[in-house]
Image 1 (cartoon, helix red, strand yellow):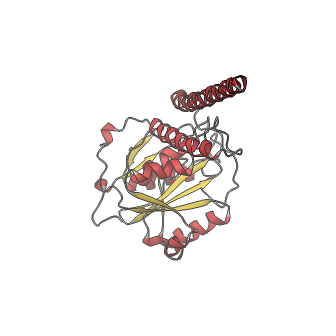
Image 2 (image 1 turned 30 degrees about the vertical axis):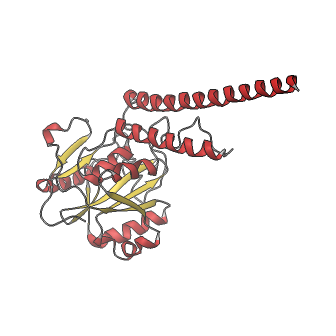
Image 3 (image 1 turned 135 degrees about the vertical axis):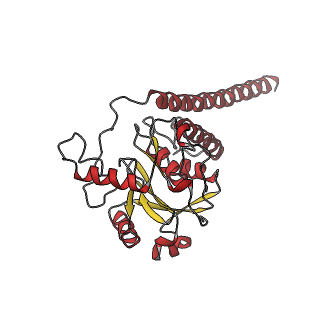
Length: 280
């Protein structure tokens, strides 16, 4: 759990949606700093795929398709296992909110420090920073303050609309070792609570005629219709796609190598069998 005092000088770390990197944004805002990149996540997904492939090939499960990644899609959507692995680096545990061990959080969520929310292909976090709760949805221009009274009702509403919610527990980083001047990922920013409130109010009062304005709140607002939002950026993230493609290519090459070994073993076995029959 977080200790006393003010973390990161009282500033809030927020990331604005880039391509389909909401899983990266979600974890970084849980940690309150730019700790992970899309390439870190692609590497974690590759490691998980390799482990799963070795286990499933050993079990000869016909339902498992080793050519496909089960932890990252080609467009950059990551599995909950990747988020769990990333947070494990910081000794943080991800627990489904509907599990028995999370029952106290169901009764009084205000006593916790962070929640991860997921629906379709979107991730975001709800985080307590310096004693106040904020919605760090990357589709928002700034973190949105949540009152302690509203927090419980908001989580219940999300669950009612089909969101999967996970509790995050452990010793959260107290200070981010990376200063605001060193944030170079292009979508991270440090904001004071006052600046965040001002930006939120400005966005809420902006005319809805701006393209995409009605969609920026669609995902994590349970009172709006959920749908598939358009990508906020016109340009695809080619670097992310290249990293994911390389990860999947490595997996395919390993699968082929394993298949070749098994084929060679089968051929050798058949040759030995034929030789024995001739001698007999």
